[in-house]
Image (cartoon, rainbow, N blue to C red):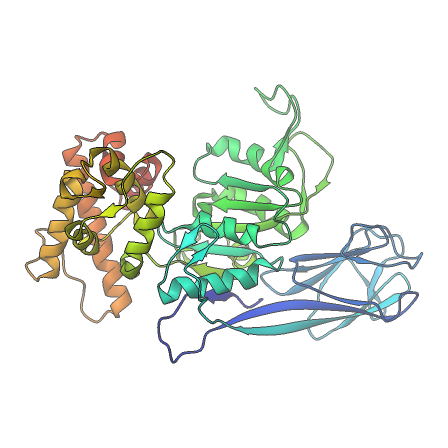
Length: 457
């Protein structure tokens, strides 16, 4: 099983963080191309005589698409791709074999060697407070800038994790913008926003007449992203029955449209995101383990806004200056900043942005004051302040004893979210659209939170 590089920024200045990147090296030992070598960080490396393969050989006994080396959950696999003269490990012709201790193989008459190359990169927080469209001065955010800068230059698959509204799509766009694929397409697919019966068609495409309503052929998002990056958002919402099909695409970099016999090769970089604990879903058998390890070659975890409150002034300045409409508001009053520091921000940076933009029309001057804020936010911040002072909030349990600080904090936040949602629905009389507006998040986010906490609207 390949090592998963989980990158969770650490604020301990005495602890050196490192990014562990694993690359594959290939070299021709004997044959017409003797001495040719290259290093790859691709998930799948194709070997053959045809231009377009990752490792091109001139040996006339090598087929156009001869073999491939792929990362899988169990290790590195060598596969023959239906070649004319076969792929051999020792004297044994193979169709598929794990390359463990065996480091040499033969394609046609060309003898090749494979090796794993480990690279350890020290993570030093970037000096900048702006990276593409992301802003932050907190140590963990600036460390993330360095991680993204380094990972973007590779072809490695990346999993971005974090709560709703923490900026997962911004990180994904930054990876694309800093990559060699920046001039190619960036295609977003939200796994939780498409009807279950349409997901396969959206991902892989379909031919005319493949099903009722398929009046014309259509390329799926993997084909649309060819030459660029595909961003799979809300990955944890992908139905279990469709996960094997996604795994095949990731391992083989080929798609077959619904109703079509033809297989199409796709050249895409995959970045995925989720606000769910995929490892927990794996344990609950709701998410495939092999798909998780395929996607989480590098994992970048984003902190919630409540853990980076020192970024509030910078974020507020940035969000006000990048508003999509003209206005004269230049900041917030000191008492609003104090309130923002007390509020737990369940919707994170997205909620902060929505709160600021909704307050602008209600400003009488050039600063957002308390009167411009939604009444619900002022009330919720006050309740959170009471809890912090030790008076507690009615119905909100204290964390269980014996938990670590992180576990206790998450348990308390979970309890807060549930209470917040219950009160929100009561205030809005079950109207999800109004609840989403009052909470400063979109309707889809409210629906997911209600589902996660098993609350019926």
